Length: 372
Image (cartoon, rainbow, N blue to C red):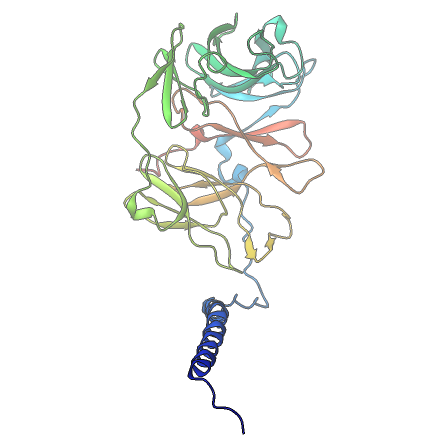
């Protein structure tokens, strides 16, 4: 006959069983939670047999014919040139590329005549030593920012930014001040001329410096916050009164942007894929639309990559802009200097198909009668 079991042995066995049970429960909790979380995630929608069709937008050059001019990419007996600004309705300001000593030229749209207005200093005669960045004009003056790679004892091998000016009719180029390199004044924006000052933006502030020279002054600026009425959109950016944002991206649907006032009114959808705030609270420089097909982006058969789009809020018209890059399916479009009367409406320009000309779309030439 077996001896009677000690009461402490029974208690220990019960305690061990409870411990094992609790351990199993604890091990099951993460598994159960993970199953619950996975089950709560909605499944991706099934890919439809037929995807939405990407619209074939018209050419901006056909929609706004009176705003488009053509200028040469290389004048006879001159180096390669590109648009910088409009000096008048019939005169374009052109500049050589950054691969050579920069020279400004005037191009007459009526006669095709080209003549030099001024040339950068002799020391700028080396590749990428003196790169024209942003240009603005007034009735009497041309100003520009230049990225300079000239070595200095205190700044050897580093790039800095300078501000230059010259008479609109041509003449000697003059250095106004350094923007970076000495005082590191932020510079992130296009230049404009306001009275006797040059104005630009950088690091969320506005800056100015007298054309005659002097210290750079930071102007008071209000903090830019996204209004409550438009916060449901993604990546919202606002101008004075109008904002641009992205609605939630849905799989297998055509990409769109939303343009609306800061208070959320006058909302309209634009077939496009990305873009910043409206230029002059009117024109949108957007990416072309596509269908969000999970990992792939479907464009039109004629355009295997998204072609940039110009959108006019006043007429709600959109047109394709930009030229195809060589040996690539991608497009490119550049922005030029502003005219003094409309500093927020820059030039848009791109290569012609034969690479012999620049197509220039001057936003200030588009009538504003439809915008009231």
